[in-house]
Image (cartoon, rainbow, N blue to C red):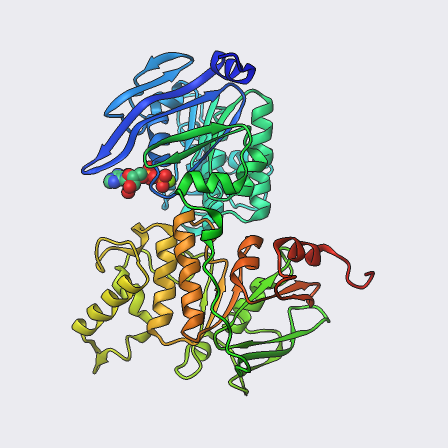
Length: 510
Ligand SMILES: Nc1ncnc2c1ncn2[C@@H]1O[C@H](COP(=O)(O)OP(=O)(O)O)[C@@H](O)[C@H]1O
Ligand SMILES: [Mg+2]
């Protein structure tokens, strides 16, 4: 009470949860959770997957009623009867699951309930797209076609429309549940500019994210959740301590010890004279059992390199050798081909790779259907056995192999993709930002899995937007800049700081 900050936050609390509990069947999602949102603050909410963040946001957003406990609005207990009720009271919520209606246009989704109308109340269909365009432009969004069906636009664009739809209703309180999980850096900057604008106008905001740098760059206070309730609320806390509180583990334990690369291991993959568009070229080789990191600023061609080695589309220029033999990769089927075994695990597992409505089992066995079929009929027993083994080997969290893969958490979807390529006996794994948006515990498991795969002799090319992860999980890191390898870092010089500095330093001037 005598702390000035606590006094301020308390006197002007606009929304709060008080010892809220909620169970789904046998799962206790919230166990007496509390949160106080102060006026005009951005409140970061962090915690592992399953900690109860989304459930709390659903309670505060009026989507679900708590079993016990109280929601306070401006200090008064309220019973929110549904999302419409909370909208009326000035609470805008972007839920973690996207809610756009796929068969309706972007404009219809955006302006639902506030369409331009004729005097007698009829919706002016012809004016809808123009109106939506103007509304989007007002928010700095120019690249989304309001006439497109929601189902036709990218996942990131859908997310942006979801956010825009809530913002244009000018809520007094804005709840954002993992709004950045499918956004790239530029789009995150767009969102943060909107958040700062709203905060300066007095809007109070709850923001959840798995990316710690986002939380620290935007949040005024941070509440850490674990096991269905808060562990504490902080105005300043460093990542190490936050992770310890979220998981009960130390951050050093996040990254497994690296198995050593066998001395004189022949290169499994060698690339020479490769170009990522410009005149500059580069090359590298990757040994069996090695984890080779690729670092550098966004837009330096990392993605083109990874998709290029997979033939989707092929590299513009360059020679690729597998086991010393030059090969041509014109399309993914060339890369996947038995004996070559190059596999790509992209970061956008929803858009590329997974068939979300299909069972985990089918997603795992997709590329090897030929091998487990007799005269075109899949041998179901074998398929079931292989997928069961992979589920237990990779610790994929799913009720069963028949579960639609789209219902799993992001990290577990990522494991299904890795599992698919292991079943296909791939030897060269191209892992592109595979832990992005994944919670701390699952990230830990994926890092352990990658180290184990290296130990089994897989050659791993690894890109991550998390520089710490590159520094800790790789034997070697190449930093790309301007289409060239600007630096090659090995321990002890391999640190996150060294990667960042090589990415931005002008090597020619040095
Ligand atoms: N509709 C639901 N039915 C069953 N279990 C649920 C449901 N929603 C959430 N849960 C469970 O409640 C727990 C908390 O989930 P959630 O609030 O989504 O956590 P977070 O957002 O922190 O990842 C998890 O164990 C989750 O599986
Ligand atoms: Mg959640």
